Length: 336
Image (cartoon, rainbow, N blue to C red; front, side, top):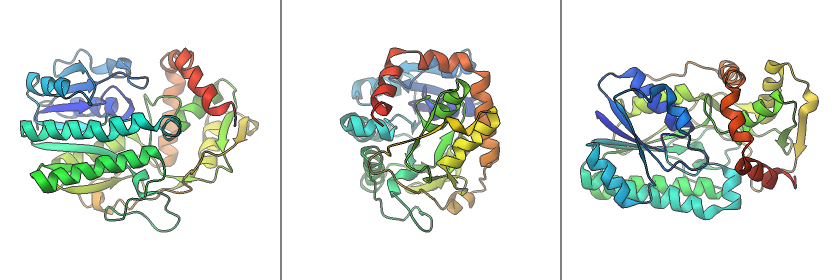
């Protein structure tokens, strides 16, 4: 696996993974394949733009001709698929685009992986496919019970991957990550939204009572876990990646305010979103058995994340000042 096709590599986790791989291995080349939708940003890859082992190809994973062209041009021997519509709130507004990208796009990539005989196809998934978990922790063998169009589309992609392993002996692996935080996360997602709003002394919109439980993992730990599964994981298997540490959304928001020296009067409860899952919790022992572990606990991850947004105002202010961002923000929050 020397020539990676990283789809969605200009987005949050994909860009961090691209940097991680180029910084970790001297013999790996990475071709980022990205449609450059609202969340795709080539500035996320500025630190590697001059690296001769990095290439960029603009394309849509639903376009089989574009995918095949990139596979041939860059002699791809492994695909890591980050490309997806990812925001639950957006999936409630426009579910069709999630089904198109997360299910049909995955099918296109799997067909390319099969036809070109790649050494590995790796699917980036989410703990949200397990649905609301009120007790215990989700293991990789648990039933899938998605409760939003986003999580349902990701579950559909996972099942397609497993079917290609069974039907065509395609060397597939899947990781299901918890909530990632860190550099380059599009600021409509909750943590960068709260950080950037707090910097500007704007309200932090807390859904419902804020007691929803989440596992916040630093994106660098997630990238290390994906790399570990690529190199040590067994084909046909799924691996959960998270910290095992749970935090309420309210505690997360309070931590951000404390780090920025902002008052808790900025907390603003708003109407909860439909079907909001109260708790996600995953068992990460299977990944741990491959000698992978997190370097960041919640406190360290949120501290590093807040510092990055404080130090990189130019990056997020360009986004938040744009018409598309303002339109989405008004649409999602004005009636709450």
